[in-house]
Length: 350
Image (cartoon, rainbow, N blue to C red; front, side, top):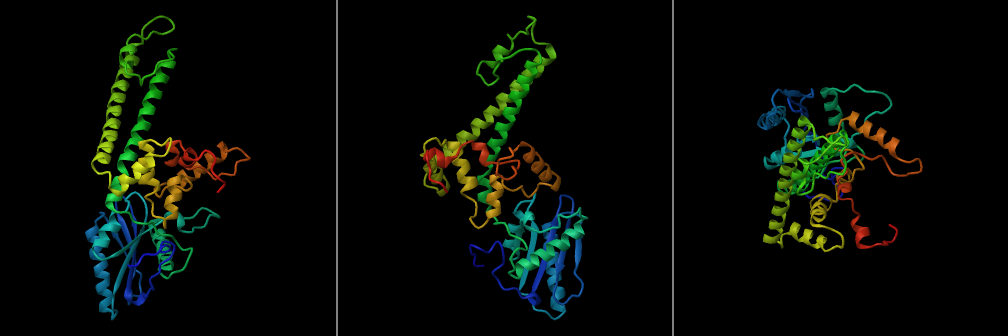
């Protein structure tokens, strides 16, 4: 299918509803609910798969196609859509290999009433998804927006950066817990990240002159062992990344990392994060870029989480600030740098 720079906000392929089987899927961990619009059948079929099974979904789509053929319709197209979420994009890729058009809808692009609390069930969500998807297929704007489906290799390339980010967060949590445990005893100035921290831990004394209590000392030793284990994992990730850059410097992603590394102030970690996170985003997928930057929530966030993030942002933001509400998980902020301002100390406005 010909791709265009605008084909995520609306479909550019003419829809002939008499020759197209349309299906939407409500995904969950325990079951899938599939709703369809089948030509030649007056009712809108609805089927629940008690166990998530892509093969069963494919058989259901083929069965609906056969029912439409029996009703005298000629089916030339089967399209399926579901919301982006915890399942990611594997189902869309799996269906695409089997000649089924699959689309992933941005949940935040579907308009819902905010005037009053609304009932929310899987059946109601299926109806809302069908109306939004049908409008998108007709080429009408402002019904919903599709997410660009990445390749498996593209998704896998992001894993080292994200794993290292999580490990760094865990390391910070361990260090903070150790410092807090010592501060409760009146001990300050101990840095668990130093190379000789385990030896110094045994010589610490409380302000009363006594040693660290045995249970607290045992806890700190376990935390120290956990800290060393996490440090080793971080070093493994960094060493593997450097080895890959050394072995294949001409690979497009590696070449981009090496180019970014030349920017004054950019380290290898920040360059790798920008290459596989920010610059690898499909330019058509503006919502994905906004979600990455923290301007919008992630697809698997619940409404309660998003409302809480907005509420906390309003409390923390100064009254004169014009910035939007800060969302949790801003991966751009993890680098703590502005690459443009590091390269150009006084960049022009805009």
